[in-house]
Length: 365
Image (cartoon, rainbow, N blue to C red; front, top):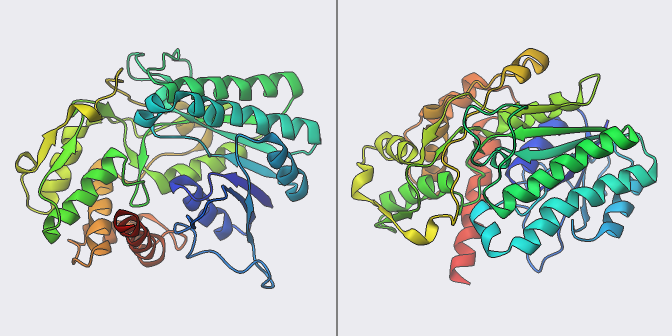
């Protein structure tokens, strides 16, 4: 089997690549050309493509340019396409709404059009988002109306309906995975969960004194990202294309996340966290909560990592990344919950050290 992954260098793209390689796939990933390398999340699985038996290949491309995408799709001839690439930061989407619409919304159309025009028989996964639900009352499922509250959410709604339209108009095997928030040690350091756990490590090192956050009362359905990429794969293994909500069925506030994370290392979050209005969105999504009955029934998928366990995995990883001895519960959780494809030393520890090193280089550049 051959898979093409957009957004391959991101959190989800790197975990999905790991998972697919463990199942014997040949994986082709699309990366943007830049003046510096941004492949730290993939370094532990990357092999020289000239090496006999190599199964991971990276191609330069950009979601804003259709010709490149068409060429990559035609030349790689994938059995499955996982479209994860996007401008995916909600707060940033208010600052660059036009680019967000182009990359996140129209980028999906460009790929779907390339698939249709090429005539290849492939299965297409669109990474949809719980942010599409916006102000709709929780819990949210596949029949909940979309009411996005950000340019990012609006762009994802457009992309969702384009996948549905190509499925119905051209009989493409196109599916939407409406994923609720999923986090991990590979989450970008500007996303709130990783911002919290990374700050704890910096505070314990004596390199940071305060953590500034936005809306502490915002509630999200938070799960562990490696489990969610398994759901993506399951969606494309079904007999018929369809759309699925993926989440934990629990909701927790930003304040709860901070309380859990600081408490895990014996600190009182109230002594370190302060609210800064510049991190508050112009329009907020108050509460997201997944109703995952369809995924449970049709995909036989349920999350195994609980909210407190997610927090501990992330705190342990960020402590280890800066040279501190982690508390250790997060490490043990992976030993119990996951098979060989996702274990601490390779999948977490080495990658986060690499990401932390890259982040520190940027700060001192």
